[in-house]
Amino acid sequence: MPQNIPLEYYLALSAIMFVIGAAGVVTRRNAIIIFMCIEMMLNAVNLTLVSFSSYLGDASGQMFVFFVMAVAAAEAAVGLAIVLSLFRSSQTVYVDEVNLMKW
Figure (cartoon, one colour):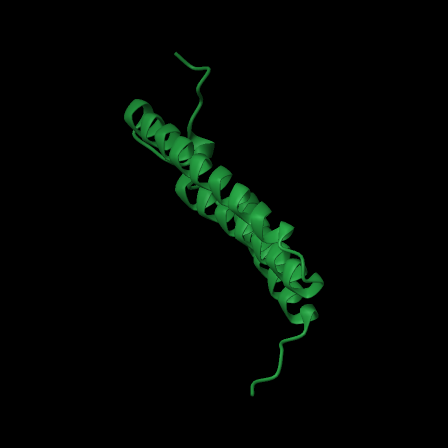
């Protein structure tokens, strides 16, 4: 029978994923990569919610994960639509090269 993985391991993995995602949002210039990093941050939060839910024996954290996943799916759809519109208007997806206020 396999041993249970301690809660601290899940939390450490979640923290590492969140830090990698936050570093990607801050350092990257490509809008698609930025959205992928935001998705990684949301998945890190989901891992934390599921970990605590399992540790405490309560299903409310797992139900909350479904709401976070729905928000992430909506964010991905809206974000990709914005990136597509941005690419059509300025022919680039690099966020520092786009000036929306310029005519």
